[in-house]
Image (cartoon, rainbow, N blue to C red; front, side):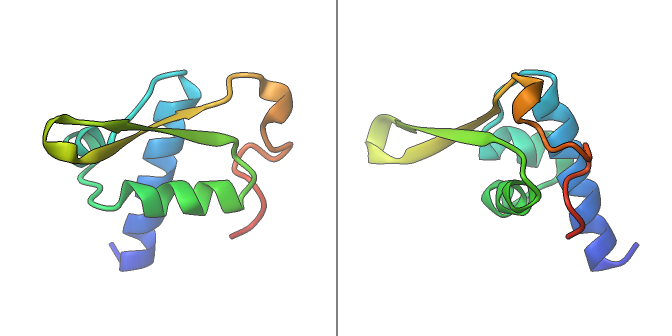
Amino acid sequence: MSYAERIESQNQQVLAYLRTGKVITPLEALEQFGCFRLAARVYDLRKRGWPIHCDRTAMEGGKIVGHYSMAQDQGLWPVNLNGPAA
């Protein structure tokens, strides 16, 4: 599988997960999908029109962790459910 195919596979896995209404963190994305760069995958999906939101939470020790979710109002989703062509 090429690099571009792996990236697109991760994009689709993250998208499918968020479409269920669940919230995901970078650690969960790494554990579930082998995705080291969740923010980059979210960036790709946002470029395609997906309404993904990030709540940042301060953890012990001062680290900030992003919790990503998607608006469940399907009227906000792209008409083409894969989003515009990348």
